[in-house]
Length: 177
Image (cartoon, rainbow, N blue to C red; front, side):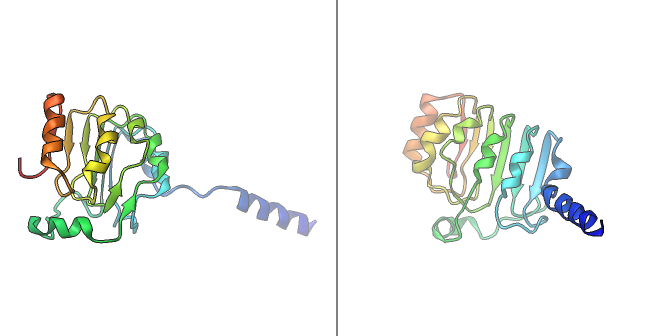
């Protein structure tokens, strides 16, 4: 009988899923995540559990009180340096997102199906490692987009100006405007 009781406890322990890292943020509409606070190097798959979030701000450090380092003059070097990151596919399940900030996360490309975030109106991708020429087709599929921040990424000014001319309702910030 003792063995059966022990076996039941072991099975129960292994069958229970541990709570995900963002459990305390699950029902929030506005969420601020500092990766350093959670001791993370990149956005984890657990992000997909935030189904109700409408405004999401993710940065490496706290959004309050951060300073820009290195200086703007070093942006080209930042874009080319390694340690590129990508967003997990689970990110695309955040269908209610309207406002998204992914600041300084070393992201080098957006997920192929980024357009699934179809409710996005505001998108800040500043200080990442994106080559916008490779990402613009994904961004153009965001039909509700009204504001886009691309500062600190590799941008071709002519390409952005053309897109903005074709879509005057989108405000695009990309550096030397």
